[in-house]
Image: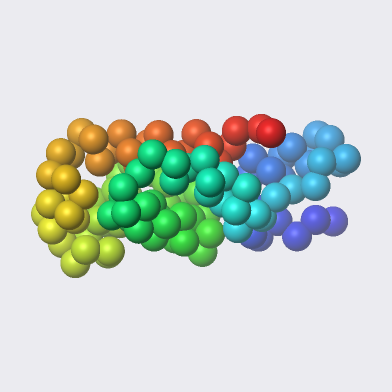
Length: 109
């Protein structure tokens, strides 16, 4: 049996249906996608997304839920408002940044 506690349900199900595909751990998934994820980000955005990815590795896919964005901003920047200001002040762009990087985590090679 595969140890699945550090993998997403996506990987476990893929393994169940095709045992030739080894499930990726969350840290392996992040490592494989990091270069693509960070390509067009400024340093503050990179730092925030790296923080989000560390939480994802630690606790799982629930950290990528849009409802977690205010909590993640507050956790990293000590308040949601300060986080918004640090990331450029545009809530829509921050939300889009948070959503857009996630597509690279599950993109197949």
